[in-house]
Structure formats: C-alpha cells, structure tokens
Length: 417
Ligand code: UD1
View 1: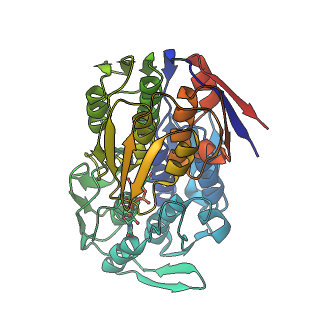
View 2: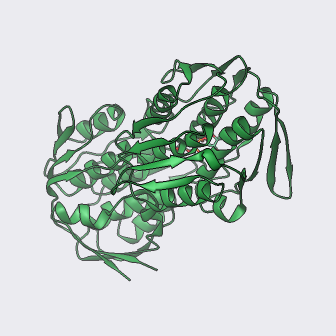
C-alpha cells in the first residue's frame, strides 16, 4: 500500500492549478443514465472515485470514450443492466446516485444498500422516501434496494434533513417523471447547482437549484449535451489551508472564491491576506495564524469537508479554537493522529477543543478517511522532521496528483510504495 513521506517545515509558495470538483462529477456521471444520447463532460478530475463510478456505469452498458486527460463522452444508449453491486457500492457510497436515474429511465433498479462508513452511519432513507413519494415500489431484500415504477410521478417531497446526494438523486429522477416535483429543504450546495445546469443542458426543466426549494417539471426524454464540471471548492480550500499553515504565499488557478465564502472568511480571521481574481485566488499567510472556532453546517455555512483541515491549522495557531461538527457523528478520527504529532486536542462529543502549540513533530500516522487524510498532510507539511502517512488510498479518492501539486509549491513530499 502506498504511503506519503513528507519532510515538513517548508512554507508553500508559487502557483498551482485546481481540478474539477469530485462531488459535482460523481452525480453528473450518473446523469448520463437518463438519456440514450451522448453526454460530453469536460474538466473531469482523475481520481479513484471517478474511476469507480465509470466502472460502475460501464458494467451497466454505458460506453466511455476518453478525450484527452480531463474530458470524456458517455453513451448510455446501450444501458441494459440497472444494477449496482455490493462490491462497488461498499467502496464508494456515492454509488447510490445511480438509483434515481436508473429508476426513471429503466423503470427498475437494484442497488446495494451502502453500509455505514468511517465518519458515521450515513443512511439513505431520504433517497428512498422521496422516490416512494414519486410512486416507486421499493423494498430492501438481501442487502439490496429493489425499486420499480412504470413511470415516476411528480410529487412534493420534504426531506427530514438537508442531504446533498439525496437532493441530487431525487432531482435526477424527477427530470423524467410525469408532472411537477417540488423538493423542499433541498441542499443548496454548488455541486447541486452544477448538476442542475448539466441536466438543464440535457433538456430538463429545473428551477430553484441553489435554493432550498427546487421545482422540476418532468419531460418525456432528455438529450445529449456538453458540460464542463465546476472547480473543486474542497480541494481549493485544502490547498489554501496548507499554504496558511506553513506560513506560505500561493496563487491557486482554475478556481475561484465563489462558493468558498465561509472558508475564506475563517482564513482571513486567522490572519491570512486573500485576494480573489475571476479564475484564481492569492493567499499570503502571517508568520503565525490565530486560532479560529467554527461550526459545520450545510452550505452556505462552513463545510464539514473542510473541518479536518481547519483542525490541522488550529493545531499550530495562537490561542484555543472550538470546532463543532454537526453533520456527521464520527468525524474527529484525525484528532488522535494529530495528537501523535504533538497537537493539543480534547474531544468532547461533537466538540473538539484545539489549543495551538508552537510546533508539531513528524511521526508515522494513519489516514482514516478522505478529509482526515488531508488534515494529516497539512500537519505533516508543518511538522518538524519527517511524517509518514499510511493508507493514502483515501487521499487518492479525492485529491488528484497531490504529491505533484504540493511539490510544485515547493513542499518535500514523496510517494513511497
Ligand atoms: C455529500 C458529500 C460529502 C459531504 C456531505 C455533507 C458527495 C458525493 N458527498 O455526502 O463529501 O461530506 O455531502 O456535506 O457529494 N442522512 C440521512 N438520511 C439520508 C441522507 C442523509 O440520515 O437519506 C444524513 C447523513 O447521515 C448525514 C447528513 O444527513 O448525517 C448529511 O448527509 P448528506 O448530505 O446526505 O451527505 P452525502 O450526500 O452522503
């Protein structure tokens, strides 16, 4: 298994380009299932999760044609097997995103029920409840969601909590339903808007995406389209944190401050100077950051996917920060690893109290999930001496060529086999 070896203590500096958003790409790849015409996607990042999704839809009969490194054409004209098997769903929970499109286009779907995952139980009851409201007959049998519907019918759906993939699944299903669907309490995440834009380009009639009430008028069929995936706001935020923590000065390109308000606000509060260009962001860090408290919430508030990275920067900031995680029940696993590097962190339920220390010391640590891994990379870049991060397959799920990008910024980072 690959590991990442980091020699810490170098302030990051220079330019690096950000990739397309993983969490926008995953639902958009599933959108191809809604039509028998080709869907061309651009700015697609090369990640393990994307490869898994391509394998998953490929085994359903979708033809994938690569066009260079970051562009491809998906053709679901030959879709013949509406099945998502357990061995794929268990490695990537976002596989549940095939359920809505398959049911809408094929009238049936058999999708493995995802289990719990490292950061929490993460049920999919809201996806099921919404599809049932649209007339689907759904039951769970031998660990699989078995869904059927001759044609889905528009409905008014209220989700119990804000769910990102739940909103995306239901929005995709509703595009081909008969009549009007209203999703109340919808997720407002920018990735939901990117998906809506792609669906609209395919002929869907959607209004309100980006707000908490999305209205979809079902159509008989969708057609082919070309869509460019939005920049990855979480990758961008992670590189901003890495530069901030190391006292660096960087310019991130192919990205923008849009959608990063909560993160940029906290970085400014920590003492960073940030300038926003139309397609780039500059950050200049102070000699030492100030501790910043935060609370994770659905968009537009502070994202849970940036919580671990901010815990890392608070580890070496001046003062004490309180971090409150409200989305996932078990998302502090990076704390024990950060403590191994010398951090002062106390966990109390869904709160973490982080008191900054003057420096961290390199050690061997273990990555436990995607964003936890990112926090360990940031801590390793700051720590004195050598940090070895084990199980970096988690990082490869969400960060494209991370060692190459960090090396461009002057970091000493090497992948060891
Ligand atoms: C998505 C993101 C993930 C991010 C998360 C929260 C993708 C591929 N992943 O995950 O990176 O961390 O949003 O911003 O976009 N819940 C239920 N029942 C449901 C659905 C959700 O109880 O049917 C709960 C979850 O357990 C969690 C909360 O609702 O506590 C929010 O989860 P959700 O927004 O659905 O997360 P994902 O869409 O899986």
